[in-house]
Image (cartoon, rainbow, N blue to C red; front, side):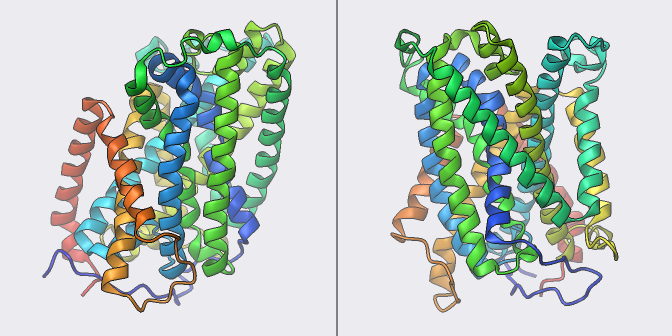
Length: 455
C-alpha cells in the first residue's frame, strides 16, 4: 500500500455527509476580511513593532502580504479546480498523495486550533480593558491565565463556547453574523485612522529600523499570523453556490483589501506613539488612551472585541471543515464526519474542538500560542504553492476555471517567501512543530493508514 496514493475528489452525494450550498462571492469575501482583519491590527501589530521591527513593522506587513498574495493565487487555482472542504489538505492529497496530505492536514488542525485560541486570548485582553474603562468590577484572577498570575482566562473560554453554538446553528446564520461584524470593525478602523492622523509625528519613526532588516523579517514571520484567514475561505468550497467562480474572487479580493488596511494602520500606529510602548495585548486602544482620547479608545476596544469575534468564527469554521474532510477519507474516526440532519453542520466536530480550544485559551499565554500558528500556516502555504506546480505537471488537462497568472513564477515566489519566513521563526517554535509532527505520524501509522478509504 503506497504512502503516496492519491484519490479523485467527487461531490458528496449522501445527505448524511453533505453540507448546504448557500454562500456567494460576496459572502466569501466578507469571510476572508472577517478572518484576516483582527489580530493583526488589534493585537500583533504592537507586539511586532515593540519586539522586532519598530516603525518598520509596516514593511513586515508588506513582506507577509506578498507571501500571502502569492499563496492566495495558488489557493484560488486549486480551490476552483479541486474544491471540497479540506483546503490545503485536499490539494496536497491530489498533488502529492496521502502521506503528505495527512502531514498538512494534521498541521492545519494545529494551525486552526491555535489560531482560534490565540485570538480568544487577545479578545479577552480587550474585554479586560473595556471592563476597566467602564469601572465594572470583575475578579482579575478570572481574567488572566495561570502563567500570568491568574486562575483562568474566563472570557476567552466563554467566547469560544458561544461561537460553537453559533456554528452548530448553520453556516448561513454564521455568515450573516460575520457580515455585520465586518462592517462594524471597518468603521472602527476608519475612526482610528481619522483621529490618529491628527497626532501623527514623524519623530516617532526615528529610528525606522531599530532592530535592523533582520527585525523586519522576524516581524513579518510574526505578523504572518494575521493573514491566515483566506485559508479558511477555501474550506467553504462545498458550501459555495458557484465555487469555480466565487472562491478565487473571495480569496484574492480579501487578501488585497486586508493587506492595504494592515500597512496603513501599522504605519499610523507607530507614527502616533513610540513603538516601545506597544508591547501590550491591546496596543491600538492603549495608544488612544495615551493620547487623551478615552472615548475613541473605548470605541476601538469595543470594535476590537467585535472584530476579533469574526476572526475566531471564521477560523473555527475552517477547523471543523478540515477535520470533516480528513474524517471522510478515513484518516480520522468516521463519526466526526456525521452531519446534523436539520442544521447540516458537523456538530460533533464543533463541540469537541471547541472544548479543546477553550481549555487552551483559558490556560495558555498569548505568545506561546501564536508562534505555533505561524509555522504551521507557512508550511501549509508552501505545500499549496508546490501543489499547483505538481498538478500542472501530473494532470495538465484538469479543468481549471481559474489559472493563476505568471506561472510558474507566482507559486515559486510563494514557496521562497514562505520558507524564508519559516527559517526566521524561533527555534522553540520549530521544536514544538516537530513534536506535533511526530505525534501525527504515530496517529497516521496506527490508525489513519489502516482505515484510509483511498485505494
